[in-house]
Structures are given as C-alpha cells and as structure tokens.
Amino acid sequence: MRKGKRLQAGDTIGLVAPASPVSIERLQTAVAKLRRLGFRVKVRENAEKVYGGYMAGTPLERAADLHAMFADDDVRAILCLRGGYGTPQILPYLDVEWIRENPKLFIGYSDITALHIVFQQKCGLATIHGPMAAVEFITDDALSVQSLLKLASTGVPTGSYTGEAWGEGVMTAPLTGGNLSLICALMGTPFEIDTSGKILFLEEVHEEPYAIDRMLTQLQLSGKLDDASGFVLGQWTDCEPEAYADGFTAQDVLKKFFYGSGKPVLAGIQSGHGTPNLALPLGIPVTLDTVGQRLHFCETIVVE
Image (cartoon, rainbow, N blue to C red; front, side):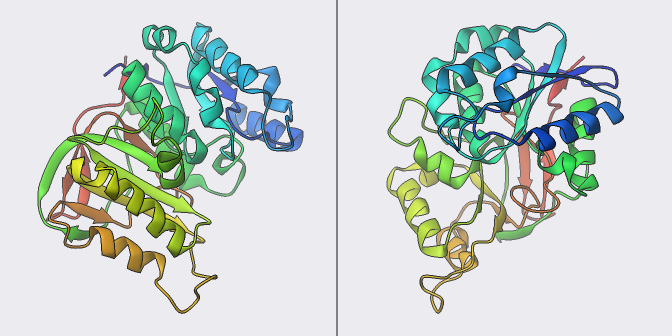
C-alpha cells in the first residue's frame, strides 16, 4: 500500500472541497488555525464556489482541484474542508494512475468516504479517516485535532481506541470503510467497496434506525458483511428514532446485525460524526482484539 510522507511543522497542507462548499468565514478561520499550528496552506479557487446550492463547484472543477493538489510538489498533505454531498460525482473524472504515482496523505470523513474507497482500491493509497479543516479544526475539539496531527506526524495513532466487544476473537486485516450511507451509495457502481478479508469500519449521522436497518440489509444481501473478517463500529450521531419512536433504537439495529455474529466486533469506537473524532488509518493492517477490547495498528500510515 502506498503512503504519504510524514507531516511536520512548516509543511504545506492543501485544502480541498470535494463535496459541499464552506463559507468564506469558515475557510478563513480554518486557514488561520492551520497557520497558527505551524503549517503553510494552499487553497484551490473552487473551495469558495457554490454550485447548485450544495456543491463546491462542478464535478469536473472539484476533480481538477484534487488533481492539482496531488500534482503540487509543495503540498505534503491534502485535507478536506468538509463533507456534505457530491463526492461520488467526481469519481469518474479522477486520474487514478496519476494519483497512484503521486501518493500523499489524504484526510477526511463523512461524504469523503467515497474517495477513501477509491484511493485504496484503485490507487493502492492508504488514507486517514479523520478531522476536517472547516469542522473540527475550527471548533473547540482539540482532542480530535491532536489525534490527527499525531497520526500524520508519527504514523502511529494516539488516544483511546477502545470499545465494547460484541463478538469474540482476534483478527488482523486491513481496515476499510467509513460512512454507511456513502458505502451503500456506491453499491452497484465500479467503485463499490471490497470487504473481502478486511475489517469493516462503519459510522453514521442523522439517519433513523429504520434507515440504518435498510442500509445494513443491503450490505448483508450483497455479501459485504459475509465477506468481511471483522467489524469496527464508530459513532452513530443523532440517529434517534422519530418516525417509529417506539421502535428499535440505532443500538438495537446494530446489535441485530453484529452482536454474536461469529466474527470479531468492536463497538463504540470514538470515530465519526461525534466528539472526539479520533483519526483512523485506512488501508493498513490493524488487529481487532476483542479480549483487550481495543484496536492495535500494525504499521505506520506515513513514510519518511
């Protein structure tokens, strides 16, 4: 698996908006915060655009911004400003061979899940599921930011990657996944996730239990859950039942699919749409240890 170089103070971070736009105020705050942390910053012009009300430029413009950042020798890491909507639209326009030959640290989560999957499967690039510039970096979320900077600078995660064991066993395999909605949105496309022999990480936000049930059923019927070697369940934020207030909770649905599945399962990892949002390395082997109830990371996410 290809990896980006270690991030250090004084390096240049490229900011991109592959999905939804951010306000100029949030963008300026993010840039100022990164500079205070000791980094130089580059921003592509489309980060300030609004297309259709909910996207930062056309699909071609957003893809071009990504290509430019991977092509820029000064840029050490590419940090997404936010998620939102629209990332899958740019996938057909990506030059995966160019990205493969110019590996860099790539960081984001939520709608950015689509890029994590493509970069791992089409480019052989390990990526970081973690805090974004116009989200955690501009809020009072120091633990999330620290977890990302430690991972990007040393290659070794820090923080409490512990959870509740819902299945027994110890499994070492590459970690993949991200936002459940985005994983399901790519099903039936050339970019759908490959879970075979991998540990699948899932998280979600603003989805009711019945919707989570529907999406997990889709993964189950497609064989994606059967193919996975184990599961890591992150944060399920604002997923309370409303349409069926007396029905299953999100926790009930998750237990229906994963508790006693016969595979190692670690639930309650603090990664995803919550605080803190601990940075997770994707694409590299991890050991899911249900006895110790924690994740162990088998190699670094960066090279010198």
